[in-house]
Amino acid sequence: MISIKNDAQIEKMRAAGRLLYSVLAELRQYVKPGVTTMYLNKIAHRMITDAGATPSFLGYEGFPASLCTSVNEVVVHGIPNDVPLAEGCILGLDCGLVLDGWQADSAYTIGVGNVSPEAKRLIDVTEECFWKGVSQMKIGHRLSDIGSSVQAWAESNGYQVIRALCGHGIGREMHEDPEVPNFGKPGHGPRLAPGMTLAIEPMISAGGYDVINDGWHIATKDGGWVSHYEHTVLITYGEPEILTLPIALAHAAEAGR
Image 1: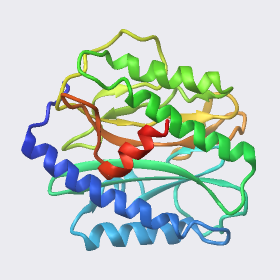
Image 2 (image 1 turned 60 degrees about the horizontal axis):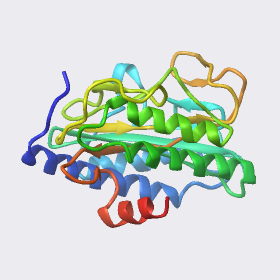
Image 3 (image 1 turned 90 degrees about the vertical axis):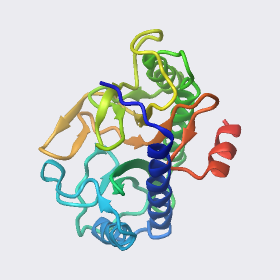
Image 4 (image 1 turned 45 degrees about the vertical axis):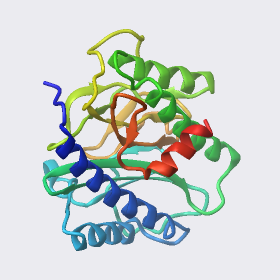
């Protein structure tokens, strides 16, 4: 069942989203060659707990960290380790937290040091895919309109959408109904309504979309690099609200698309 949040609940999700944004924004300055993903995890964990929140990922179905750190061909669920990051690789940082009983979930991919034009373009187009999906998050549109827009933009740029994974509803639980695929035909699924909160997260591959799973790390089968971009989004009576991005930044980012 898809839950509809009331004003008080939405305000709590805004607070959780603001905190998560501050965590992920802080991590950007530490991403550089030679830094380990375990070090980044420690920063995220400390910031979350010092603010009185709880890391959503730590212990979730046995996941051993507060931050997912996915390098190059790893799509999601990369476990932090003590291997130094290499110049030119790309790193997906995915984090979630619970504040006052309400969840926030967000992710981005960032280049480590100087990256190739091809890697930068993959990162940029993935973020563009997110905004294409968000543009469909209006009252009366269908759920599949989101993924259809993501897929169309990715494929028009020569990329593939990872199909084994999807976005999701979010609220008191990290994963709620509905699932939000990043592909498909428009005009299907539930109609979107104000008060719905969805985690929209394009995962875009420079190669194929088939994946392999070693238990946690989910990576592309052909080794193609992947970019991941995610925010928690509220459907309103007007434009959708990005709960994990300050309003001014959200408006500026969307205006630039």
